[in-house]
Amino acid sequence: MKGSLVIVGFFALGAGCGLAGVLPDLSQTRLSFYALCALMFCVGIGVGSDPQTLRSFRSLSPRLLMLPLGTLVGTLAGTAAVGLLLRHRLLTDSLAVGAGFGYYSLSSIFITEYRGAELGTVALLANICREILTLLSAPLLARWFGPLAPISAGGATTMDTTLPVIAQVSGQRFVIVSIYHGFLMDFSVPFLVTLFCSL
Image (tube, rainbow, N blue to C red; front, side, top):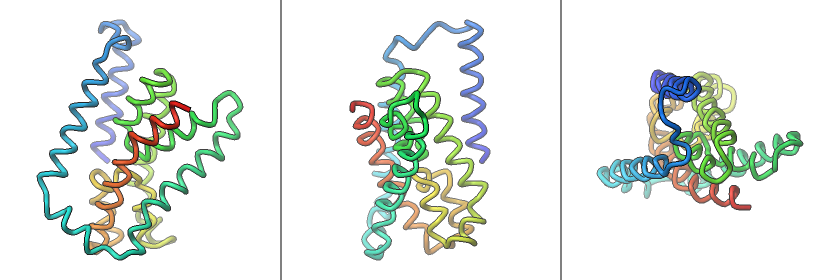
């Protein structure tokens, strides 16, 4: 949770500096694109440097392999339902925000590039909220709905920031499931977000 608060703090600091005119306007530059490329490079190093994690995926139950699909369908169905209530927004806007699956740093950059800073900010806040709510509600989700519920709620964050709390409330035997789930959700974000932004 501390990491999430740090991210929110930096976002608030950046917004404050932008409003005060302390820093030059970077919205017309390609800086966010280069930052995204560096971020994806670091994620690739993290996955590639731990071959044990990739080997562990082979031991997963076939039923558990379907969990990312359930998370994807449930998230998009929920965001589509909300999108139908928002008359001033396109349905694809809501789907693009939902397709971030909690991966706020990546999805908000893509959405800002395609649809503008306003929707990019909505995506950032919505996906940060998903992560924070997962961190706070994981014990209740595991107790009420079972050990897979916090993993599904965490979306793309289950490979990193929400993994410790998931391991604690769901048990160590679900750590590999959580990493696998987060890996596939992470991988789907750039494809789905750009798909919905381009429709």
